[in-house]
Length: 337
Ligand SMILES: *[C@@H]1O[C@H](CO)[C@@H](O)[C@H](O)[C@H]1NC(C)=O
Ligand SMILES: *[C@@H]1O[C@H](CO)[C@@H](O)[C@H](O)[C@H]1NC(C)=O
Ligand SMILES: *[C@@H]1O[C@H](CO)[C@@H](O)[C@H](O)[C@H]1NC(C)=O
Ligand SMILES: *[C@@H]1O[C@H](CO)[C@@H](O)[C@H](O)[C@H]1NC(C)=O
Image (cartoon, rainbow, N blue to C red):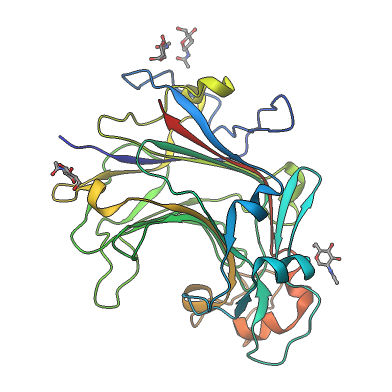
């Protein structure tokens, strides 16, 4: 029986494991009582790509078209991004920022960044995104995700997605019609919906899990960000990769995944997910974060109770976007040998 799984390892911040060298991986453990191996077969994950620093400028494309999710952003090409200082190397990290210097007229878009890897990936891949910070500003809708060709046919995996200063992460799969997932396996996230297909304008996503996310806000920035790992395994793949030998990691201690998606009967993951590029973007407002009623004191604690402010109002003032930046240590891609 075909069984492909997506595993999102959670990052509750008990501690980060320090690592050797500058190409750090911090394994944030879900629990100190991590289980021993539950996986059956040993797997040999070999480092295929390691994106760091200027790699994001040379090995990724800068999308400069209008935002498909209708955000109040103008995405800049690589040259404009450099001259605007919205993508630059700081120390060992790549900063991807939203413009925070320009006061805007009502309804005008703000300059931002949306990038995708030139390389494409398929089943049998493990992705480890190590970031020191992600956007956590009111108005912002940042996402770390992967997507295949001719959406939604090649599928979409939203690994880390949030809006404003809300402490939940949405992990979602989007597919063409005819794909449901099995959510019965153990994970810390909550089942939201098992039907993945986007059709008739319903793009709420095939499957959503949410978990408590330690958003890297200005305060938690200090504790050093986090690591999101997700694997896209081959048939007979195990729930959690047994080892990442080339980096001497021990994922058996990573604990219960935050989300674990297995193909349901009638859904062939090989047909619904293929040839994914990696994506990172920060949009503002738009279809999700700009929808009516999302700006409240709960989603944006600095905003007074009973506010009548809209997301667009927030985006006008550059100071509101100071924290709308990614600080990415590395993105590593491993493949099954
Ligand atoms: C994991 O296995 C090792 C070696 O067998 C054992 O010493 C340890 O107690 C186990 N840990 C847990 C949490 O079961
Ligand atoms: C964990 O899995 C690896 C690879 O399958 C195996 O070599 C090792 O003995 C396992 N450890 C335990 C405690 O089961
Ligand atoms: C799933 O789709 C792939 C690609 O089309 C195909 O090779 C494979 O045989 C399919 N698996 C099943 C169980 O239908
Ligand atoms: C923009 O945000 C960065 C990071 O928070 C900050 O260092 C910088 O001073 C801000 N720029 C302006 C013009 O306020």
